[in-house]
Length: 136
Image (cartoon, rainbow, N blue to C red; front, side):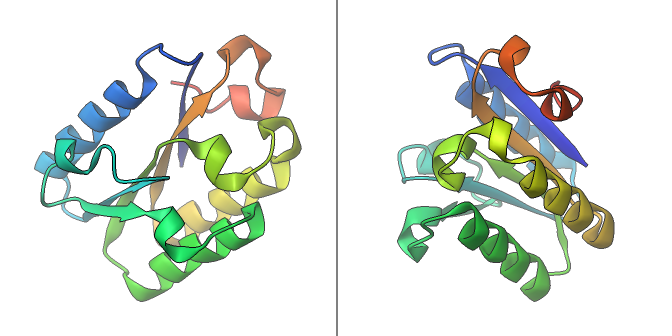
């Protein structure tokens, strides 16, 4: 399953994502992961959540990011939710061009029973139709 928190810069997306992460960590039977482009929110995330600075792993493209996610899921069968802040910056492409990426995320989610929650800096109305279905 994929969920998108969309909004323009400064609309509170990251705060909402952090709150959802910490709430999920309190109730989840599985492992919770928070991915970001830097360490700026590391201390706002509950310590039981696995915080990962993706840039520490030199991920430079959407294909590399998808492989990075696949590696995480292959090495840890207990991941139940992955929260991703700054999604557009991490994949390095416009969401309108990322239909294939969302298809792959859906496949990962179904195969591994994982929910992906993404923070996307964009007006929800301007998202492509395939992405609008995921907006919460």
